[in-house]
Length: 193
Ligand SMILES: Cc1cc2nc3c(=O)[nH]c(=O)nc-3n(C[C@H](O)[C@H](O)[C@H](O)COP(=O)(O)O)c2cc1C
Image 1 (spheres, rainbow, N blue to C red):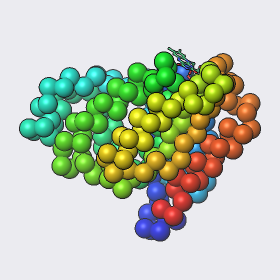
Image 2 (tube, rainbow, N blue to C red):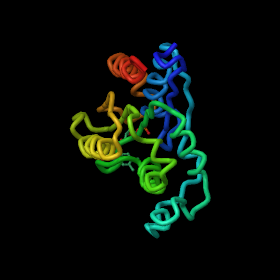
Image 3 (cartoon, helix red, strand yellow):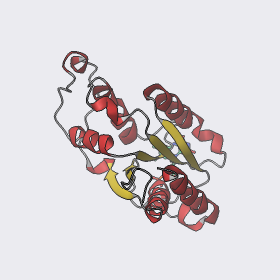
Image 4 (cartoon, helix red, strand yellow):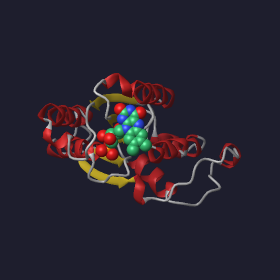
């Protein structure tokens, strides 16, 4: 049981269109390890959700509400309710997947809603990034983007799992060091919560 007397809640966000791919495999290990530490885990597969790109209409600045009515409202509620977000993405063209970037852009609406700002401050995140290249520095822009974004909204990036040299969807499942790193990240994410 957590310090607060409540189980920590971890929101797992699957950002690859490959549901059985490398980032999904490693995110499942993160979530499984967090669960073993007593956390409650929820999963969101972004490819299954309808999330429209931010229109930059800035209506949310005036009203606190996004003009687009899609699955994002439900996801914001889940973000608010969780203590840790565990995000997983493939590296696509040195950046995150379109699914994950679209989701992140829509944080803009939540950020401009006083009630939903609580979704961010003081929370923890874990980032998993898979890539075909053998050099983990290929993920530097993905890591940098999330380091800066989390710092901006007052969150802590508790752990990062980089998986280089994984191209076929089952590659990560055969790499013990990646599985170990993902499990360690899951434990770290909920430590002392
Ligand atoms: C559209 C696309 C763009 C990609 N761009 C890169 C890239 O810039 N660098 C890289 O190392 N791998 C790149 N890859 C390979 C993926 O990152 C790699 O296959 C990864 O393991 C996919 O993750 P997943 O199995 O979770 O879907 C790309 C793959 C696709 C489909």
